[in-house]
Length: 144
Image 1 (cartoon, helix red, strand yellow):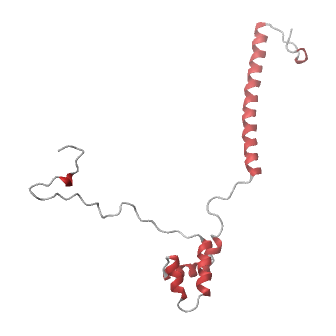
Image 2 (cartoon, rainbow, N blue to C red):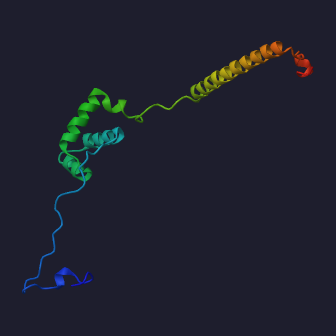
Image 3 (spheres, rainbow, N blue to C red):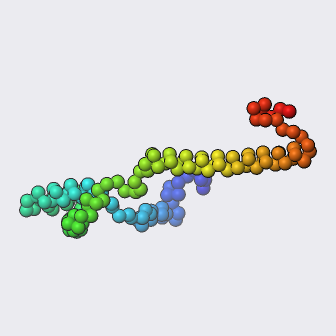
């Protein structure tokens, strides 16, 4: 038997071997549906406007359960749906605050750089004094 021949095409003692059946178990993990507050409020408005028997049609159309409506009505009375109607996550940063933080960091960096430069200048002055070298004034560009 070669690899190109299918296993089911070769009868064995008059019996055709069965191919293995696929695993019936689901591979993917189930996850909860999450509904935005705007959707919940829209569905609650539609459910409140429904007459007798129309709520069931609404629930079937939206693939919801009556427990969803009960929980959402409770959230609405507690004010939770209106509180969470805005975007989730951190509020956007103020551009002025970001600019101020950037400028502070730059100021600290330049202050450290200035301190290093002043230290180097002080060392150069001491070395020139020890060696007897006279330094020119800053107006002369450091020339003797």
